[in-house]
Amino acid sequence: MTASGGRGFQRSRRKLRFEYFFETVDQPVTPEHPAWKQPLPLSRDTFSKSSRAAPDAFLSVGDYFEAVRSFLEGAGWDAIGRTLAGWDADVSSAETFRIFLAKHGEYYHPARVEAEIQGRPFHWVVNVAVSAAGRSLLLKEYAILERLNREFRVSYLPEVYGAGEVDAGHGQPVAMFLGQWFWGYHEFHLTRNVPGEEPALVLWDAENGHRHLDRRQACIVYHEVARILTHYFSLATLEGIGAWHHAAGDFVIRLRGNRPEVRLITVRAYRPLFQPRRASGDPARDLQALLETVLIFLLNLSIRTRLDRLDGTGDMAWSGALAVEATVAGMLAGLAEKPPPFELPLPFTQLFQRYLANCSVDDLQDLCNGIAATYPPEALETPLIKARLDEHAAALSNALGRL
Image 1 (cartoon, helix red, strand yellow):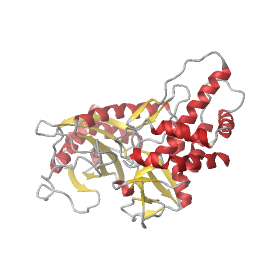
Image 2: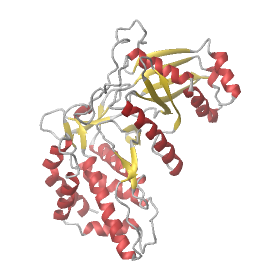
Image 3: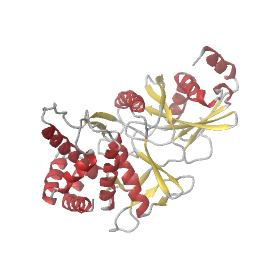
Image 4: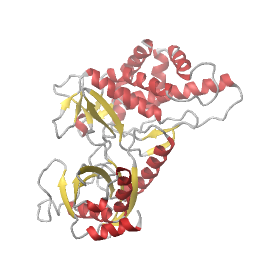
């Protein structure tokens, strides 16, 4: 932000207003609101029994809103100015910033921020971390998102613009970063209307009403989730996105007509998913090692993408078999977009499909059992995975047989 931009903010400070809202309520939240002094919920109970309030993370709802305001008046203001540079918009002309408390997670409490500037609406996300664990994760995630958006020409992740820490009172530091808000995108989760029926996907659209996705739309969602995760998986370093969960709402969708568009809004970890092997000098051996590694990547992805919680916070849920075939197809589509890590006689996707054709259902069962064994015994998803492995291996075998 230039010095003139900073002076522009000072000139506009007298007329600048902040308004606070809950995402699903039209009326502003003021210090007189009964929720203002209530403790900020510090858990959505997203994915594990450990999802509960941290003892170092007390904050009231009012503290939260005022902390986001302080960030926007400081480091966030400079970041907003940078985001608007390409739009030929002057941030100092904004009169009101509206801060919406969007949701609560195990580590983050995102706020949606909107302002009208020179007749145009602008939207951002401010990710807020209150606990010590959340603050540490937030700074790591900010660096990861910066890196991936820099290294990958095509991005399915939010841009990030600036990070900082503010004092929320009570000696409580709060970390935040400003990022791109995917306007029109919403969470989706498995739901069940009738006990015993196969769970279906429901789109959480507060503006237009929640709606079920049909089978074709659900297949597109699972296909795109697999393609995006494969897009960010490096065949050279074996780095990939880890610690993602459907139950946490990490992926979001927007319907363009009737076709879902998928984005990933958070990256908690980007690391080698497998131990990289040194080149042996034998092309056949190196290719075999890579094929084995990519197969494990696919199988792990095929299990993880079937996991959710009913309606986001309910019991653990397992998607129908349609997710398996869509995941295989999406992973292969992502693989086809990637350059091979070394010279090969054929495109890597063709070689991998030939390799998959030789995998028996027993092979798939054994490998899936090995993957299931890596899940902590106390994790809520572990019993569900182990109970469904036979069905899952059969669904994988059927999907591979149709390639």
